[in-house]
Length: 411
Ligand code: SF4
Image (cartoon, rainbow, N blue to C red; front, top):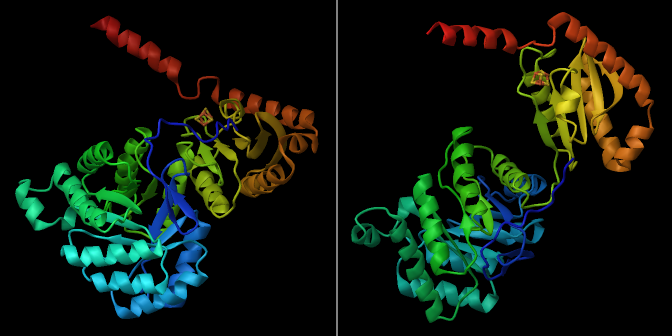
């Protein structure tokens, strides 16, 4: 595939902090975060979810720490987790102290919910002594009522001021292991708040659209907000807040960063033609089956599913591997070169087998393992059959153009 590698968008320079073994900010790769939805006190269920999240590409996992049982659960979870754990703290500052005692690698404090300066400073001092970072997690839905009133409602400036207030308390106790988020469920508001925040601080920023909702709308809203900012060079770590299995959040985060070229590709990039009058198979069905077959395979390849052998191999010639349908058969191609023909029912299995081979042995070895002349001959045969059946204007473009010209001329 045309692998352009991680892009160097002009990323705003931020300070770097460490959440356990994961660096955040500066020139560290943009990290993916998610949050468990189990009861943190249920250690086994929570660890199971953390492992699933890590396998899906999540770099840092947050768990709620809302009571003593959750804090005790964290004490058992943290040493067994494959990724750093952040405790999510809302109303009780004592839970932050308990989570630090449990050994978490980070805290998230909501300044709208813990408002007493003395409580904030006690937590920041303890975190400072332990070298544990804190995210100032401003949330549009739980903004300090005083700021809401001062700004005449929920505004970008109100959210930024909330973060700045918290920073001031941290500075008073000489604590600076900080990252900040100013999330809102309204995308333009969230984008404005982060833009404003990045003008006034160089602490690393954690991006997210809060309460984005179920799929697919939630995915679209979160992607709109997060990618707009990333392309402006704003953001050091991201989280999709979806009403879905958190594994979907991790996958989405990872996929967004890979598709923007901000993280090295680790997973299959499945491309597929949109299908048209020339399609010889149900492209949507085959593409979905291929997507499921590759979902958990760590293969950094671009793989194409194309509806016809007439145009498919040419249109997807940049893909590492692809398959195009023709005359009830699947024509496999590697970097645009036909390599094999399989029955239509075996198209997905064949893709998996070839993808695994390419990953292990490389493209050249894949091309060498077969007689490409034979495959090309078969493809040419099926291409002729398709052209004979549907002509070279399967989508009836020419007919339509003639009709359009006639209509226009009549006017
Ligand atoms: S011409 Fe073939 S490859 Fe292109 S969209 Fe139509 S079916 Fe897909």
